[in-house]
Length: 300
Length: 261
Image (tube, rainbow over all chains, first blue to last red; front, side, top):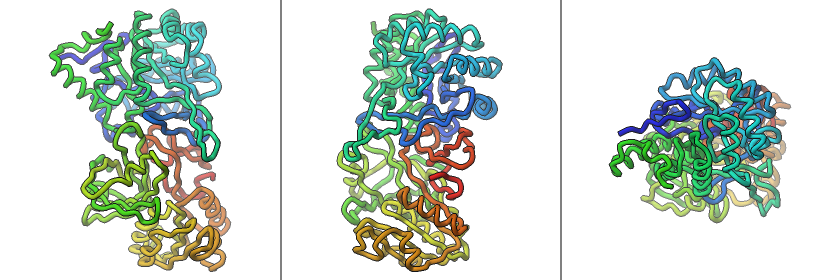
């Protein structure tokens, strides 16, 4: 039985990765999960310098999901390279570094700094809804997506995956723009912009007013968008959005994703990523499927 | 060691309207827990998906019994689900989480243990531990109106009560109690709402009394990964090198001089 997949030229032992921002750099979850059992760890977004993030409250629960407006608090690339990469290197898993910035130059600085670091893939966050500059500003206009992709591809040593926002008119156009810019893959969906109001206090629950919605409630939207994106491009797609179990992950793969990322579910169950790997194995055995790759895009 | 465990409910009762007292069989968690730590309590399904961080009110290591006293935060909430638990039911927990009070600092000292509202429960186990260290304890409890757990503190020290409406004890805040009763302490441990903690921080720092407070913030993961529950610190925090420490992992107990309130 084969669980291995090839993501943009990088072999993953299985298609299960973590979703950026929900798993830190793996250290906290390594108390619960054997990181070597995962296809890859995708890190929290990292910028050239430390970012403070947004004021609190940064999260709110909603029915079947949550809103977050963390605002990409991170220690900056130097601490990340010194501390987090060596930590992750202890494990037999792929390292995907999520890259964020306020400007094209900032994204470039992180990508260039990582050139000689032992990381396998770069995921470029052009879809964070919670920072004023950068983030989603780059990811809602196909021309902007193509331009930043091209710029980063000219500097990156590792394969580049562009992380796309669902808060767009046409996910197909955004996927095609990333491909036209030379992306080695795309990942989607980032969170859907939402808002929650406290009716007793008559104010916004989040200090940032809006936040990104994630969790099981967004799963069908994400599956639809992954399906559309996968049919619009030839480069591999990483599917994510509301995965809580192996079946949720398999929906993305059947819709056309080569790999998947598990995010909010880590908060519900810190063991969930490893359980999903095991659940996929069980599924393949039960369904008498030899190779997971035969499922990628199998539902047309 | 943090353990995820499915725990059996031994008993549950409502202390005053909306405040519940839950006893659980949780050997692994009680074996590792110290006062001031908390546990993640998980809801039945993903419709209310985030764990609820609940402070530990009692640790019975011998019998492996964990006691949680919590407030139901509203209808259709996770805590409302917990309130329906009966003897023999099961619930999923993760813990112990965070850092507790440094109760060994209380050894042989005169201390204030201060709790406000739903910040009172963790002070009970803290009182027990401080008493075991030989501390002389003044317990100061602040309530809106109805009291709970106050009678249990009398085993560990002098108990003073403040209520907002003055129906029991002194009318006003825990700080009114300290000033009116002219109480003195070498160190302070406290948990409660932010305005109370802010007032105690100012009081303790003006009087040069070492003071540790347990902070509250909305949490998601509870283990330090998601960076939802940060509080502002004076110095750069160890994790992100900004000035935002993680309440769940670096706290919830902080020295007042470390944090900006």
